[in-house]
Length: 339
Image 1 (spheres, rainbow, N blue to C red):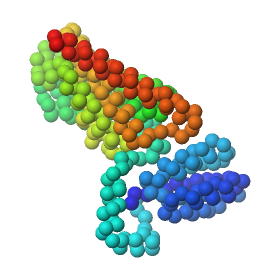
Image 2 (cartoon, rainbow, N blue to C red; image 1 turned 135 degrees about the vertical axis):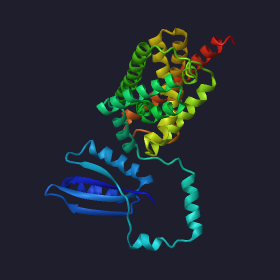
Image 3 (spheres, helix red, strand yellow; image 1 turned 135 degrees about the horizontal axis):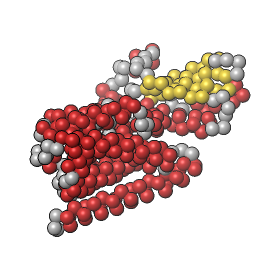
Image 4 (cartoon, rainbow, N blue to C red; image 1 turned 45 degrees about the vertical axis):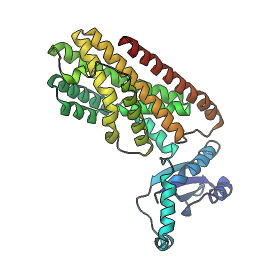
């Protein structure tokens, strides 16, 4: 069983009421120590699937109690007399637990995910350098018609974070985080365009490679690629998997068409640039739609009343807006092909 440790610093004046409430939660163990003359420290060891309920309660208390602090820590290993003895449970009980576990869409707590969103929404030097390097590598891969080089660019491209963060923020109705994630995503696309436009203009190689042309043609089937990419990225985000594991799949939908757009603009190939732009827009919309749906299924919800009201408006609006965009783009593709 995966477990996490919650540390809570509680002022003495409010300790009794809060402590009694904490004891009602399903926990593996509970410790109390005197941290200072004014506060006590409570440590609660809970399973990962229950930690969000504890954090939701503590989040509500933190808004009204001064000197109240909460931290969440990972637990790499834990055993005691009870857990050692419990290891001898019957195979039937173990099988039942596994079946119940497989039936759930497991994820990290909302609070942990919000922390990851904060990291993904920041425009840092590291983010900028990785974007620049991935753009250079992908452009060279187009010029050399090397699939291996293009895939290498996808591995290092950090384009998954901001787009997934946009979907997550829209589910919560957090417009500030949504705006920051949007800016980070636009910044990444702009940097890729800048590098690829410059290389396309300076090198003037007259791109006629399969890697390039494949990203200037768009079809309705690309919607399914974008949806699958977004779903994979959202599931990886929910389970705190390495970004590189799914980053390649998401980069398939984001990095190559952006590079193709930039190179086309640099060489003055306006028809190709339009095709790459439609493909990029289509993929971003598909990724956002699938990510929003995955987060909704996973039960991502705020807890405060005013945040719930925002989320109730933001969630359906996001889905409707993205679906309309996809419908318009699909019609553009179909009529553009003379259908």
